[in-house]
Length: 209
Image (cartoon, rainbow, N blue to C red; front, side, top):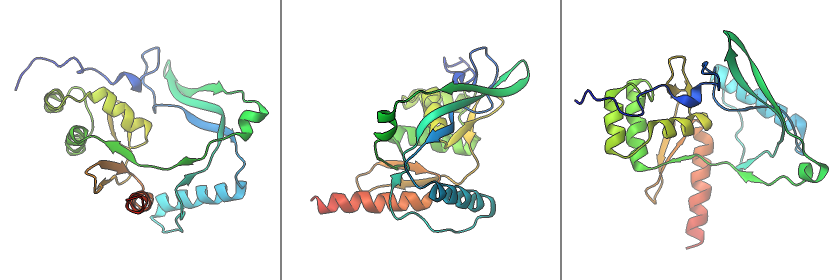
């Protein structure tokens, strides 16, 4: 094993704020928004999700993949400054037309390239994507994968989260993997939506020939 340190052998930079202090989480969180969806329906889904995660309860699953369209009006980034935790807020101003014209989005899992899957599976066995792990660094170099870029994408999609020591690892929920008939690899923490997405996507593909 080579003792030469790989260029990526440093703390994951996106886990830290601009002043170099550790962030408690990565990325912006939606704090306030506007939607044309039924508000009580969204509240009910939020309660069901919370109870399901807390008590492993089974609740009705959406029969479609449509993601509720919410216009972001206020976001926050958890941050730490001088040992004090707080939020860095960002206000977003939208006019009436922008609020009304919200695109319909469809839920989908995160796609992983085969070489990324090799690093992901290694990281799961070794406790996370760590930039001071020589085996991970050598595997990343061999398979042409950036540990930093892969970790950032997994954190952005809420598969991984930043840890105090400056690396990224699983958020604690089961991570489900799928290989579709076309040989592509997918990850999700929601097995029900993953199964529904595969059925819908590849049923449409079969119908289209």
